[in-house]
Image (cartoon, rainbow, N blue to C red; front, side, top):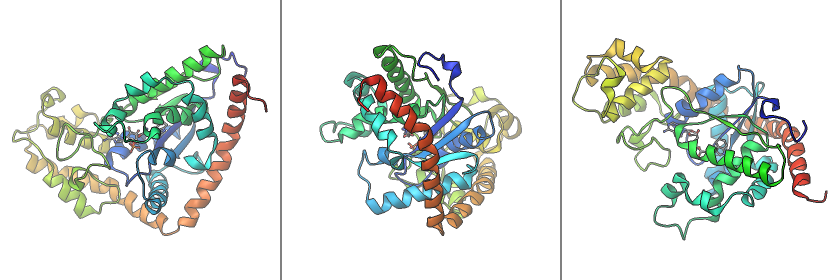
Length: 342
Ligand code: AMP
Ligand code: TRP
């Protein structure tokens, strides 16, 4: 590919990542992984990543990090990501991510980083005490994507701002060095559940870091736990509406309907055409049944895969070799553009 290739000349390639900073949640599954799986069968090369270098921007116990990285790999595979169709990697095993990340630390501006809402949320009032890595996090994320010249990035809604920054970094690099080397990546934020909310508070995102376990469904929860969490999920006293417009200002009701629609691969209006008029006492058991039917096979397959961690490590080692065939030449070319003697 020449330096001046137009964006359309880039190989259609998908990259996305998830942090191994805890267990997988239903939010990760519906907001991200389901789309990762379907994109394998479209006209893309697909690369999916456990971003362990991002995870350590906040403290991770080493044994937990190792366990969570393998469990996340098991979650990807159990959800349908095939190591034969996709390249599955652990970020730190492909050193070009961190190497390009450094170059991007020198391209991105402090002011851009300071505007990131995820940084502001995670740092809170404590901006002096958080790691420098947490501040620079989006530059490494841009490197994850651009070291593959990835053209499409499926993510949940919360990553939109980081992807805009990735585009800004690519554009500034191309402009500063007078090249057309990095693609301007397209975010893929689609589906009924791009933002799954907490089961305890419809104004908060479902998150693996929420102190309340009842706020989320973990991919490793058993059928009883899933059913209990849904039964206890916060709702309002009204019946379900028969059209999406009726969910306005009803965040908890909207969340449960969105989850149902995403799990059942329907639109919200299709779901409401069936369940409109029902009370939550009737709707929740149906949602629980659906969630268990979709998630239980994934969690039991995860447990099976986790009983052979050496096999997971082999898959990741193979993924790293495949990945480096793509990333090493792109990093080399970047170094040449920047003026590094090689
Ligand atoms: P993280 O767990 O923060 O590394 O997120 C990994 C992926 O899951 C990203 O694409 C997120 O946007 C997505 N994600 C995380 N939580 C949610 C949620 N509650 N709803 C939808 N997508 C989510
Ligand atoms: N920041 C993402 C998150 O917290 C994880 C991530 C790191 C990522 N690098 C990425 C997502 C590259 C997509 C592409 O969810």
